[in-house]
Image (spheres, rainbow, N blue to C red):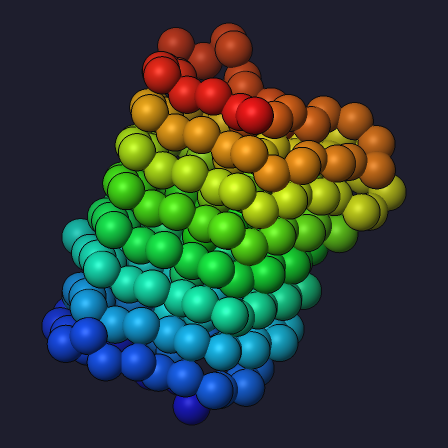
Length: 219
């Protein structure tokens, strides 16, 4: 069953150990508070039906740190927001994470994080395919409100297969409302059933004055 760390502030150090061959209807944690580091996941299959879903956690909040986590040969699907690692983060620091996971959800779908409302993502890499049945899909992050993404990459294919006219699909990020993206790249194929797809970012809100994109490329 899931572990709820809300109000507890746990320290979870996997010491390099691996969690493998698990089929479940939810990830390891619900609302993550504290820190997680040095753990590997392999052959994990999650078929969720919740608002948020991720193999590590559904959500993570302010002050949470996640570092040195690897996910391989895995898949996750959800009826809502979905990330290979965490569904939605707000004020969370994620670093040195590698995710090889097929991710599918309705909206706010990303190879590592479905949504970033604030926080940092550094030296993180996603290689799995990402599929949205509606909108906001990115190879790395589905939706970026604010925060910093540095030295990250996404190489999986990204697609929106629903009927939403403005799908907002990007090789790296589906939609960007604010924040900083530096020294990142995306190489996967991007496809949308309708409109608004980009090799790097599907939609950037250019009228926002707190957006910086530097030294990034899509190929």
